[in-house]
Length: 238
Image 1 (spheres, one colour):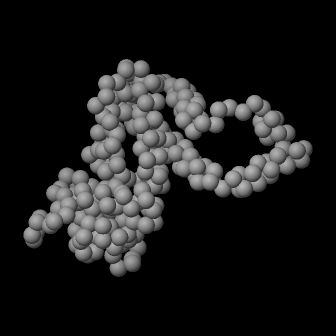
Image 2: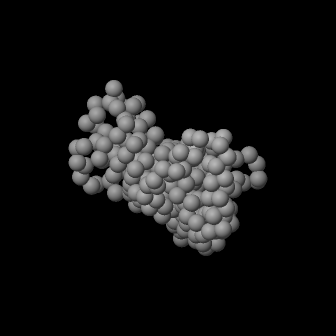
Image 3: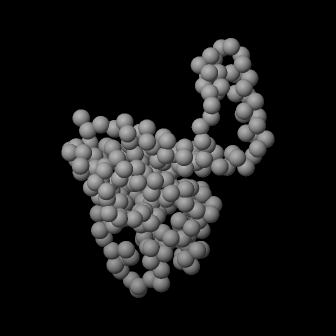
């Protein structure tokens, strides 16, 4: 989605992107805005995936010329940054924290998961570095406030938030993939038969024992909560 088909650009300067005006300073006031362009890109990604988000399709959605959009998002990296921050505006930031940092951090993770499941393209968009915009920073501020009772320094708190976000993104991506796979019962049955055969071959005793153990609740919410508890309850403030 770069102009001229050249190498992928690295995105607009963060200060210009987030602190500058949301429309070109010169020329007539346009009938569309950066917000409208970003919302159109998000709607395309929600409906068809990130691959469907092209400047041509976004321009058609807002009724603009393709080239005029480059004044707002000069490359794919910039547009993805705008999209990530746009949907991050759905995250609540004003709720009262409990003061129990583990409980508050778990609440942060559940909010992130819900957001990613609403926008299935988001985990992939977060897999590379994104420059945080105002909505993202507001939610980060909430998470750092939740971690204040730990007494950890700023660098450690940022690391924990990054670790948590990476966990949620990975788990949400897995949930999304599993949901897609569940729509193919023949494939799921074939995988189950394969694992049963492997467990019975005598070469994988640990796996056989694990597969023979009583199953745990497989509801997505329960599974996520179980994994999240292991992650956060194991964090220390040393």
